[in-house]
Length: 76
Image 1: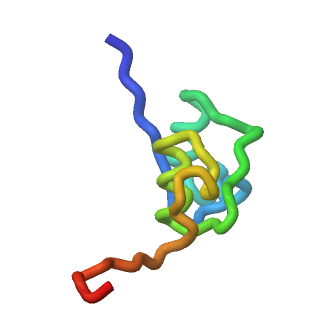
Image 2: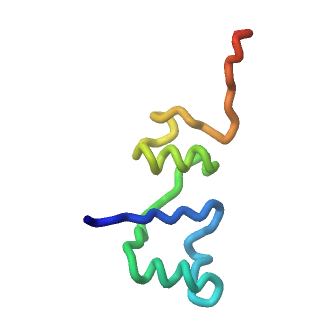
């Protein structure tokens, strides 16, 4: 059985990961699959990015446009 581990480092730019500053992450990247053409979504908030990774959709399609939420607690 194949297993996949997805490592997401919130607010860490890829160009900041190298053997000197982040040796374990650099080693993981060298030993695994690294997606050089990856680009984040806008807005680049945690919830928006995570939803796009999970669904494969852009924010306009999945509907999470930021880190804030509005909850209807019955008052409309």
